[in-house]
Image (cartoon, rainbow, N blue to C red; front, side):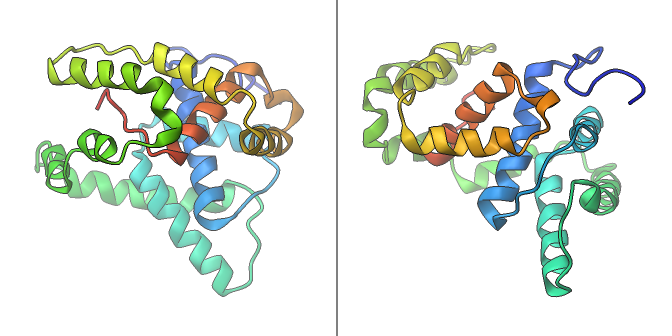
Length: 207
């Protein structure tokens, strides 16, 4: 394969953010549709390109849903992320055209309510040992702290669920779905964190 490995750091792109973005896409496809396939370096490189183009995750999710629906209706298998690329590019182009001249429309998300408040209203019992850490993040967010660090939360979650059987099984399945050259401790760590945060609907305090 020519050029840098897809697991190498890319100039101007934070590798940790790459992993976070990529794992959210893989996890969504598995969680929502039960779609799993062997992820090759070519798949990984395509996901990195979507990340570099700053394609919003909501555009990606819509595209995945459309393609899965169409292919299932035609009994066509999904063999890799290349199956989604045309739909992603088409929807991203439509997204850009739709937002031109409309300014920042992110405020509209507030109509759905504050996800942080919603999370604390139904605080998961399993996360009680980390309540002080989560409440500290909430307090910093309310105080307008610009750069929140979630390192304490991340480390706490990894320790709290270190012996969790379900997480261990899911992580093993995920790693086995990756080509050997893509498997490393950083991507395993990101998968574990994304799985736990998704399972307990832990909000993004930095948004």
